[in-house]
Length: 121
Length: 108
Image (cartoon, rainbow over all chains, first blue to last red; front, top):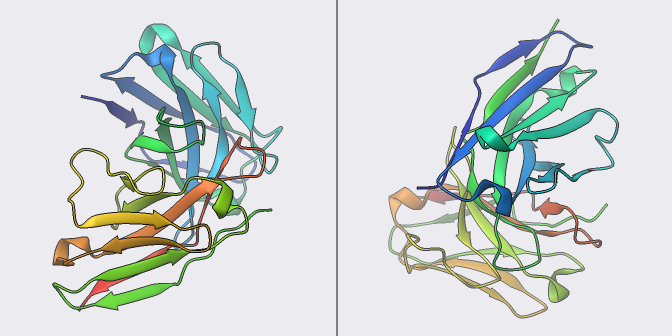
């Protein structure tokens, strides 16, 4: 079955970086795009961007451009999200999600379980 | 930036019908998707392409997009349906998803 399994919770100090892992299984990895979404406590989900796993092309939300990087390891069916220059406002649960293919409009048919990133001095 | 608007809360008794609305200027031209999120869990897709249900989602969940009104309907609400519900569409370029503010469904 389709699974996206994320790495565990992280705590960072302001100015530091964090790298979150999303290991996938149960589907043809290179045929999909993987999106990253974060959700601060009590807030709506917010998109960071996405990566086309097949060719490695990544597109970043303007809000995070220059501060976030998506990479992938096709041999391990794994996608990575690295966020730099962390501030307290980056404290949130970060999700990876598989983009569905029923329509050109982006949406998510499977999600990782989420990774809590806490930024505190 | 493009925003979707939902009512903050909806309350219904078990067995009644819950209607959750979503509004946004581009919705008449775009598909809408709905997610259910329970505390401490990832969202789960319950409706895609306005009115289609993924496999495993109960028939009591349905969606509609008339161009002027977008609605998630849960008929015969059960206690297990208590959750936050988010509508989702896309930005004007079609590159990124946009979520509504979420509606907390309370089953009385």
